[in-house]
Amino acid sequence: MKIKERLKGNVPKDCLERLSDRFQVIGDIAVISLDPSLAPYKKTVAEAVLSSGKSIHTVLNKTSKLHGDERVAGYEVLAGRDNTVTTHREFGFLYDLDVSTVFFSSRLGYERMRIACQVNAGEDVLLPFAGVGPFAVHLAARGARVFAIEKNREACRYLRKNARLNRVDKMIAIVNADAFQMARFLRKDFHRAVIPAPYGRDDILETALPLVRPGGWLHIYTFKKRQQIESLQRGYEDLGLEVMRSRRCGNVAPGIIRWVFDLVKI
Image 1 (cartoon, rainbow, N blue to C red):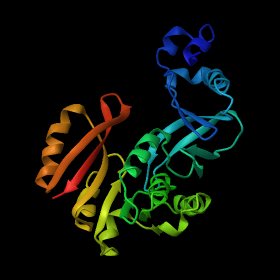
Image 2 (cartoon, rainbow, N blue to C red; image 1 turned 90 degrees about the vertical axis):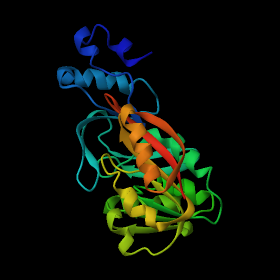
Image 3 (cartoon, rainbow, N blue to C red; image 1 turned 90 degrees about the horizontal axis):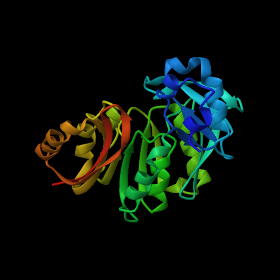
Image 4 (tube, rainbow, N blue to C red; image 1 turned 60 degrees about the horizontal axis):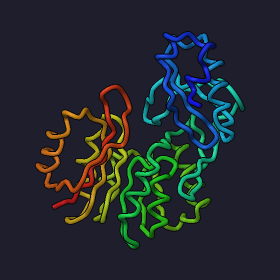
């Protein structure tokens, strides 16, 4: 039964219209984003979410958007355990993390596997914005040597832990640094770059592009309106990139879509 169905009679109809039946689950934590009009009913909503699945033990309300270099949001515990630390399971891999101190999206699970399936053993892969390691672990498990760059020190700590947890630590080099400065300490020609860029930071492509060898691949994630895609593709071509494919990876705001582009450097 959907959350809205569970709440009929307990929450006014006009408020329910502002509630989404969809929410993100990270490990045993459900993350919801309530409209301010639902504030008087937030505990009621949270209890409905908590009872919607046996695997959910905590319900968090996202109180602020991602902010700062750490890419973390604000949360409040609404129901269940007063705990923001969890273990997320994805395609047989395990990721320990604290959602209050690091960025993690469970909605990119398919993408992480899709990209990893294109990688050959022995490839050198550049990974800026590595986070707690969801892309890095998938890639390393395929036999790639991953150079993971992450600015958030706490995320790096979890990345090291997750690399060991999934037995790929020997395949991942971790650098706690600003990805926009990576050209200063990297001189290697990578076979591939995987770039889960933060919102509004497409300019990282200009930093990563010189580090990828001709014929190499770049997979970049970006947030755009549909009408912006044609001009974006022309921009990639002007940079000497061939667009092999693009796909939507979900809506993130009204009219704003997360896209991924698979590019080859000519």
